[in-house]
Length: 121
Image (cartoon, one colour):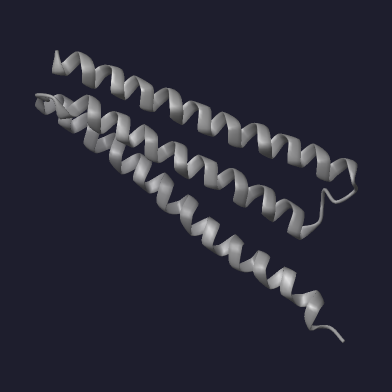
């Protein structure tokens, strides 16, 4: 029974992760079209804002996917299950690490770009 409950919880976490990534993708697509229609498609601030927003949704989705894998493997795992979880955790954590590093880099660049106009006389 506990295994069945864990399976449903893992499924719910995966569905929620898909929802988050989809929502982020739709928001990024709408923002891209909006920026292109307004003529700001190549503007640094606009594209960086879109990237930051979408990357944030991806990071959140990856966290929920990893949580689903942990829940699924938590109930009497075999060594194969533990190995698969380890590989998945390393891959997803690596992706998350690089996305968060890019988020920090672009957030700093975005703050810098927004501060420049106000520094001009």
